[in-house]
Image (tube, rainbow, N blue to C red; front, top):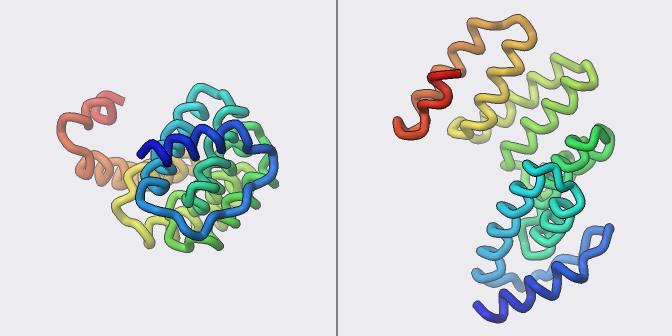
Length: 176
């Protein structure tokens, strides 16, 4: 545990703008640390601290969450309006992990912003085919459908999302 913390502390100070080289001999502690780093990156992204989020996602990539780290970096690029870089990062994430459902949804968001509605819908559907239990992706797809005039289809998906969320957590969706 201390070794992982020291590696984590060292890497957080050493990561530059380029994606670091990946260590092939990752242990369970490093993978757990990578998961915590991903969570920290997501929190930084929510706060719109893009520089910090980038550092965390690069570190997660280094610690073994390569596809997830690339997907996070794509989210940072998307939040900053760089659709070209975002699409490249999401595509790289899928190349590393073809079953990373959220990356397909993120590509769908980029394609929608570029006006490629039919292609965007296909990516949402591919992501859900990979992981039908992905609540966030299902909800994002429902919002996509609503934005494009398919309110009944959207309602069906929102109701599916509501049924997938534990009762203690679903009050927000029911009120909204």
